Length: 105
View 1 (cartoon, rainbow, N blue to C red):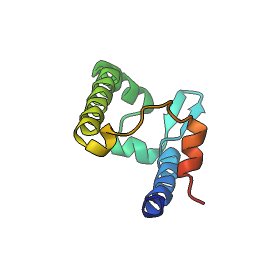
View 2 (cartoon, helix red, strand yellow):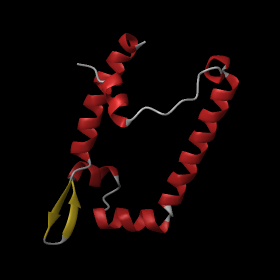
View 3 (cartoon, one colour):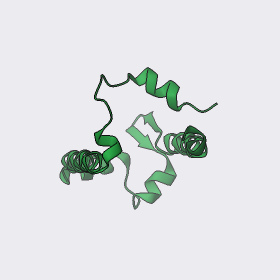
């Protein structure tokens, strides 16, 4: 399975690095500023305006609701798939174990 997931992990790493570059903020005399590409994608909003809009829209709550829905979905899938139901429920792996398990050279 890891062999089949390797291209996805490679592409994910590239995508992650690109996304982090695009989201990079710079501290200026006027406060935090985002890259022009991000500003353009946000309809010309400055970073401060983006934060203000997110707060006004209660964006944190929306993200929490999305996370809850995803967790419920995973729970339902685990219940419905017999192989997952039969898996032993031992201690969860650590982040280090997960990282080494899925790291692709």
